[in-house]
Image 1 (cartoon, rainbow, N blue to C red):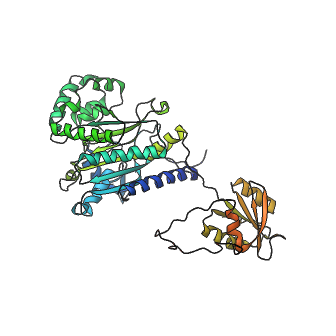
Image 2 (cartoon, rainbow, N blue to C red):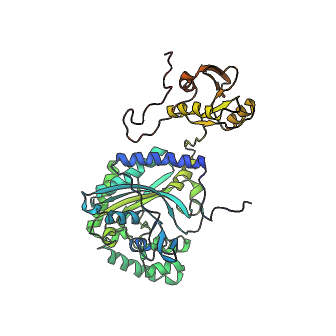
Image 3 (cartoon, rainbow, N blue to C red):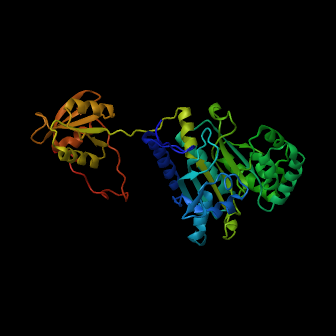
Amino acid sequence: MPTYQAPRGMRDLLPEEAAGFDRLFAVMLARAQRYGYPRIVTPVVEDREVFLRSAGATSDTAGKEMYDVALHGTGGLALRPDGTAPVTRAYLEHGLHRTPQPVRVFYWEPMFRGQRPQKLRYRQFWQWGLENFGAAEAAADVEIIEFTNGLLATVGLTDVVLKVNTIGDTASRPKVKAALVEYFSTYRDELDDDCRQRLEGSVLRIFDCKNPKDRQIAAGAPKVRDLVSDEDRAHFAEVSEGLERLGVRYEIDDRMVRGFDYYTRTVFEFILTDPEFTQAGEISVAGGGRYDGLVRTMGGPDVPGVGVAGGVDVLYFALKQQGVKIDESVNADVYILSGDPNDGADRTQLATPLREAGFRVAIDYSKRSLDKQLESAVKHGATVAVIRGTEESRGGKVIVRDLVAKEQRVTRLAAVVVEVGRHVPKRQKPRLVDEPGAAGEAPYLTDPRD
């Protein structure tokens, strides 16, 4: 047993898993940008009131699940439990509400909740999300849902079902609340402690209760969709029709309400259907909805909004469970070896042009025998070894050995990039500006014999 371990409910992402997360991030970021959603990054720590004002002081996330942070003995800060509230704070703080609307942003950040650890639920987890401020039209709801549906299809997740509902806008809330309070009050003594508290605070959240008895009681409650206004129903009809026109399959779930006070009208969730994830209730891989009153609640003008958030950890493990291949390669393709124990700088000099050409290259720094270095290169998963410091590799020459095919060739130093490229693929180098030559050219890019 090691002396120190990660805190309960938190975990390390080792290189292979981190590489898988990076792959998902690249897919999501590219898709978000194609939809006109640039990335935004907010601080890990926020004023606690940001979450209490937005999610509601009685919500689990903003209340008992939040990690408080103290600085020099002064509290009032918290690790962010979700992304929508911080993004809304940034939207107002930086005057984005005074810029052309709608304002669209994408985020990918670690979040923190003091929830009880269980399957696919961690106390530190990764979340991606889209937020759209300033569009009241149902088409914005449809776009957010279609984006998510297409994203899950793009990465290969099929064991999922989309559920949608409407909970009405703030004007409909008194009628909805009154009808639900009247119904659930008759079962007050049968509800568990959490649901009794929700009856007094936010009665809609009783639909989120996990207790089987509470869920059985909730099944007989009036349908929220029947209590909302004609305008709310018309908005939901537009959302439904939009999804149908785009071929997005969905189910209407009259009991879906989501867990935050800020939601209005459209709410939706993408629920995992694999039996591995349904044993302890429903697990959502992504969900969201409309929040037309949130910006006003946070002290800003009356700006409509709609968004979605998804769990990266949940998506990653759901894809693994389904057998979807994710590129998690982290090994160097090429290993630099030498029969000369004292040429460390020369090994680096040999590695540099290969790295600049786009190969993953690692160096064996040791003074061990060449056989031991070759053995180590194989154990590290290398495909090719480039060898110097031997009788064959002198006078501006090196040996390029294919460790898989078990064949080798003596090659001039000027042609090493070309020869290595015959055995392993180059990897595209990111550039600060996407134009030819923006990051310069590497040496040895062509074989002078060509």
